[in-house]
Image (tube, one colour):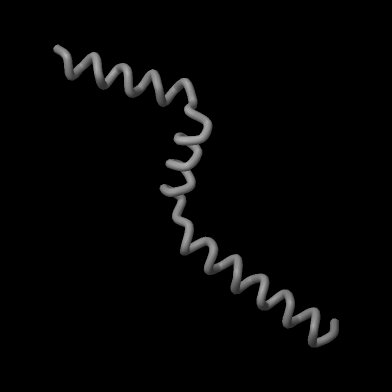
Length: 54
C-alpha cells in the first residue's frame, strides 16, 4: 500500500469523524420529521393536542 493510499484513507477517516460530531443525530431526526412528515409523528401531535384541550 503506497503512502498516497494511506494518506487518502487517513483523511477520509478524519472527515467521517468530524461529520459525525458536527451533525448530531437529533438534527438528522428533526430534518427527517420536517421533510417526510411521518404519520406516526402527526398522530403523536394530534394526541398531545387532544390532551391539552381536556
